[in-house]
Image 1 (cartoon, one colour):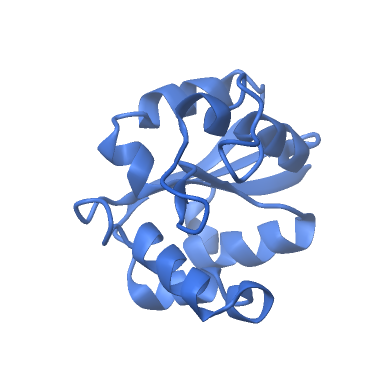
Image 2: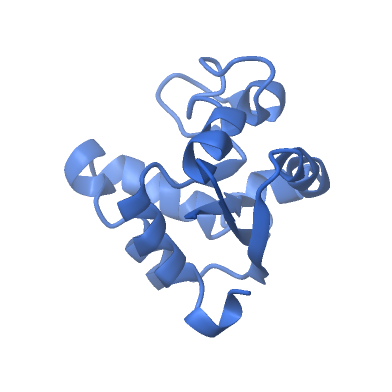
Amino acid sequence: MEKTLVLIKPDAMVKHLAGNIISELYNLDLKMIGLKLVNVRRELAEQHYFDVEERHGKDILKKLIKHITGELHNNENVIAIVYEGEDAIQKVRNLAGKTNPEEAEPNTIRGRYGRVYSKTDCFENLIHASDSKESAEREISLWFDKGELV
């Protein structure tokens, strides 16, 4: 069975979309094996986005950290969820949609609820979904202790 990490980000929390997003994820027929509300500290954000600076630059990394820690959204928390099931990673990523909400299909979470401030700024894309088995393993171990998963 494949596992994946989903983060419902502070922008979704501020918009009261967490219930809608969880409901849509529920329809994927995956098993939820971990769920918690997290007040994301800078250290966790930096570990989560460990390779962003080398791939995209320091400015993007700073914006991502401000976003995930809730600094841009009234210090809102993140809901961290681990799902398990066949093709869990691809199913969740398909539902999430492309990272940029303007490029996401309208029937995806980001296409329906996301927004872009400007072409050069961060956008509200509401959700994080692991992009590979390796990423999922690394991310799950950052956000959850082994004893927290059912």
